[in-house]
Length: 303
Length: 257
Ligand SMILES: Nc1ncnc2c1ncn2[C@@H]1O[C@H](COP(=O)(O)OP(=O)(O)OP(=O)(O)O)[C@@H](O)[C@H]1O
Ligand SMILES: [Mg+2]
Image (cartoon, rainbow over all chains, first blue to last red; front, side):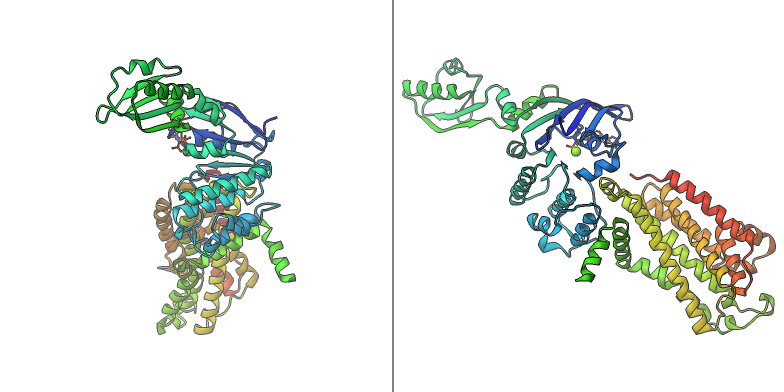
């Protein structure tokens, strides 16, 4: 049975529907991602899971509990990092960690968390004096401080530098390895690809895709991109377009660079074709399309 | 070792941890500290330095102006804490999402409100004690004659001012509005507490109107207890009714986000 269940969730603000029949289930120990453009309804959805917003209709269950009706029990097993939240401006990092530790029956060791998140050198700094990324790290620490069974992270690594981002990913992987379920909202495809077992793409309040990251990428046609600059202009690009698996061919008018979307077979065929015609492919690149491309594909259709 | 253990043991108690944190934060606000803890005593001292204010006067029933200003300064401490200091803090906690963040934890955000109320109540009582001590030590103002009556009046007055402050928070959507509304309420409360004209020297009709306000009634109750009488039940009742009405209103109207 999924530890988080969201069914036919609807929520509107002033008559405007922002979450429309959203449904998904997250299995225990899974890292589940939610992707989607700005204003798609991601925060609204996860805040219904956290019990901060009350759904208009539909059901939400966390470990079988209703986050609104059983608020108190849900708060003990769910840790949350909100997209926007602050602490008392003059509260120091250490005081915040100690205070939030005191809220939970069996808190994690805050010193270790602070160390893992690179906060141990800023323990005496006041919240108002922290940089954006430091505030973000503190917010992650506070989400994990109660040893939760489920953590909901809304834009986990926004504002973090590349190293801090990777450190945070490793921390989340460790947390999951200890059996914690993670529900994660993100705008970083690399993050989703690296961390998530499955992702839901939400657009305009609806789930438009729910799959593994690899599944989402494979779903977009032309998932291999071959590009090169031919040593002499190609007379007919039609031959390329007819190659097995080829989806599209385009030629850049400025430098004559050719881009072919297709699959692995297409890549082999392009090379053979060029060899047969004694054309050299300069600056040849063969790339997988990324989750980025898949995301753009999925969310631009009805833009 | 034992001390460390009991310290962490206590930290585990969420309400105590919240209160301790809020006290620490209050001590980091020099402005609030000055207006709540120091200013009422400074005002009393300034008035007390005027020689004629220390002389007993026939038309004040044989008491001096400074006698009348001790309860005023005591009430002023409460007004500073409840109406000047507390509302902007609480509304900022709401605006910045601090209450919301806390409501995702097992501790309800009401623990934060309770801590703020307890803290400001305690601060104003400390300030009141300082006023009484300086009044007695520096200007020979007699300590209250009816101590239980005085204590009761003090506690009821604090509760009432804090309920008023909580109502200001409940009615104000932003901390800027809270500061503005708080300031208006603050001027009205200063007047009714007798900061400009002590309630006891107000002309008949005005005094009767002011006695129906929370601080006007509290001022009379404190003055009576200071003179050694049990404070009039009607004054105490006025304070209690206001506290009940404002307390209920603020609980009902308070918005967490
Ligand atoms: N409290 C609110 N009152 C009114 N409208 C709201 C409220 N919260 C969100 N909305 C609206 O609901 C829509 C979805 O908001 P939400 O915050 O869920 O988006 P999101 O997917 O998290 O976006 P982002 O990626 O920018 O964080 C937006 O159009 C937003 O304007
Ligand atoms: Mg959001």
